[in-house]
Length: 173
Image 1 (spheres, rainbow, N blue to C red):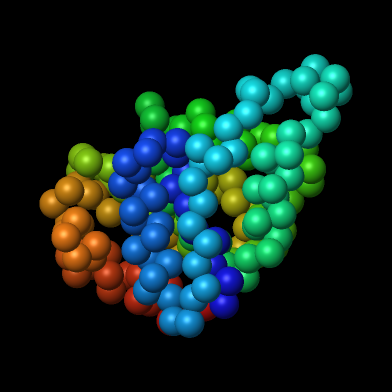
Image 2 (image 1 turned 60 degrees about the vertical axis):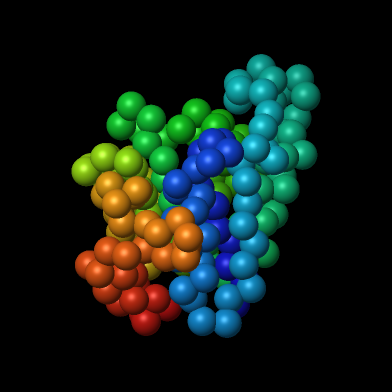
């Protein structure tokens, strides 16, 4: 199974990227492609830019990567209760190729943060908008207080409840 995993942020030390990679590794027989949003940096979307210059190659590559995947694992970072600017811009550009950005692919949506909310606001927003963009959400799970529940030495999430919920989602793929 080709699994596309990424943290929806451009932070080089993203805890959400770590979480997405952890979850992807839990999927049996996964051939994992781990994306870094820094590889997809481009000008801020505007209709004028699109009309003058077309859709950037980075947006096309992102859209193509989704199309090649059998499953998408996204961990959303939260900035002021919403998506990061890096993810939102990439998503906006990709949606100009086709509004069905997720191309009817199964998606596991995650979020984490250093604090107790676990970035639940952005995860809820992503889950509610997913059907409009042709994402077949197979499950969502948030990990609060990342640094208390992730062992950087082993690369494992130590929160039993999170792992149980994740196992349930994966068993239904």
